[in-house]
Amino acid sequence: MTVAALPVRALTRDDLPVDTVELARFMVGKYLVHDLPEGRLSGRIVETEAYPLGDSTSHAFAGRRPHNGSMFLARGHAYVRLTYGLSYMLNMSSEQEDVGAGILIRAVEPLEGIAAMQARRPGIKLLDLARGPGRLTMAFAVGPSFDGVDLCTGRGLWIGKMRTGKVQEHEVAATKRIGLSREMHRLLRFYEAGSPFVSGPRKLLTGLVPGDDARS
Image 1 (cartoon, rainbow, N blue to C red):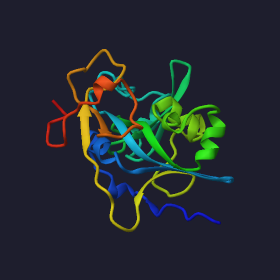
Image 2 (cartoon, one colour):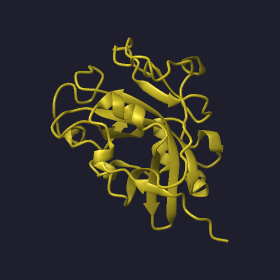
Image 3 (tube, rainbow, N blue to C red):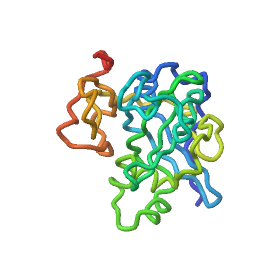
Image 4 (cartoon, helix red, strand yellow):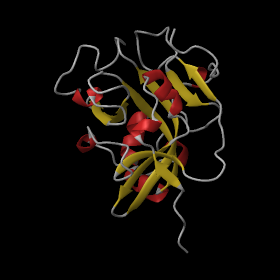
């Protein structure tokens, strides 16, 4: 029996808010898709972090360099960076062209191609396949060749939203970001409240709801 693919359509650039913090919040509940010759990998994004213009922890803070040029592309392009020499992390540019800023996709709830993800991460349970940015890129077969890729094309590696039917709304909460020692007063991590696929310490899973100001 053939299982129908999820009814997901690609997000266009016009769908994306022209603001890093708004975009990070907006992307919670959207979909990450990787169409491969052997089949589709997909999942629902449940956690992001914002790295806006002027943020001293951002890879773009010191200006455009050969290694961070993708952060200065128009919103909706992939920025893939090796962190600590260990794991690739999937980010997305988040502002107008030539403005260096981005969001980190921290965690995804796997939905399609789970067996293929498990083959890439043998012995790992479903809950942990893409729960964290390094795990996510391994499960979704994302590496350095995807740096600079346009994620709004609906081909290859792309981002999307449900095409039809009623979209279930989930509460989005905000906390400080994970693993940083600066800018810790800012609530720039967004996640789906109650999702078991969210990464990070359990103590960070008591966040503020959308009405609170995440910029201050």
